[in-house]
Image (cartoon, rainbow, N blue to C red; front, top):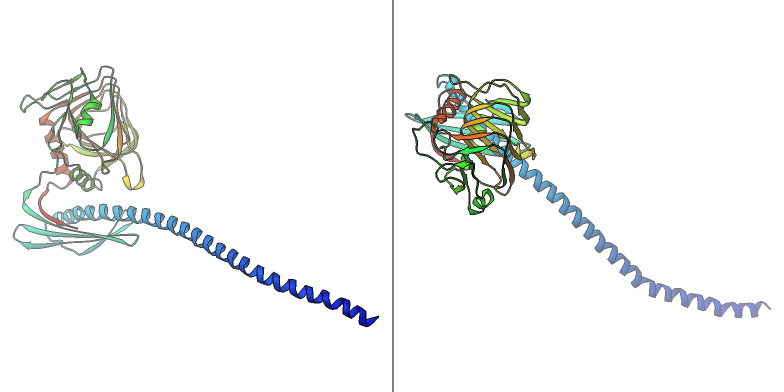
Length: 365
């Protein structure tokens, strides 16, 4: 009996061994295939994660580079200010903290009436250096020429005009040649403005293409003025400069210039902190009269309502020329070209920069 059971169990064990061997033989390719798929998927997800990390790092690096560049340019002006305040005795080098950045600035007198200013910034480990030479025997004309009542320097825009508003390029002082009411960067801009009965100037009723304003230089000027200027926001009824003492005023946040504010003189800058993607906006209301230059840099919208008068010129532009702004001229706002109002803008810059604006000979970055 025992022998029979052993004989009966023998074929079963043999078959089990065969099946196990077949299972191993069939299972090994399957395991290899699954392992290969898992490996491929791991590479795919790892690649996606790496690309996401790379894009994030690239955006951060771009932000850091822009910030470092802006701070380095500001450092040039800080160095000149120190040089002037010390009656040309200070030359550095000196470490300065500015807007969460480290600056190393210095001035070298390389020959009679010529200085070299070095500014090296460090923001989050990203460095940028600017080396500029200046002729200190000549002042530099920093304020751009007034070429129209409203100049759209670059970028795309939307334009609307209504109410009793007007834009006039005929010189209010009768001392300069009449200008267009509106200038735009290209023919597409001319079409966007279209025919406007309330636009006067040479020629009347429409915009004219004019690329004479270099907005990069305007932005450089803004960067120089920002650390020293008056910055406002909210409902503001304070001073915007007088004839005797024109000033530079920056709008960094939503600002409403309320009715009853005294006449302003100088430069008014409506600015967006582009590195933070923050949209600046100015709501001009009430009976404001401003004389000089108004600059909208990277501002999301220009809202001209109420009964303000702006005598001089308005410039609208972008650091990124692909950006867009909404220009809404309505209510009873009046934009009037006035070439003599440029003196208020020039005086405001001279006052802010210690009356010494040197003629720049070269710049290396």
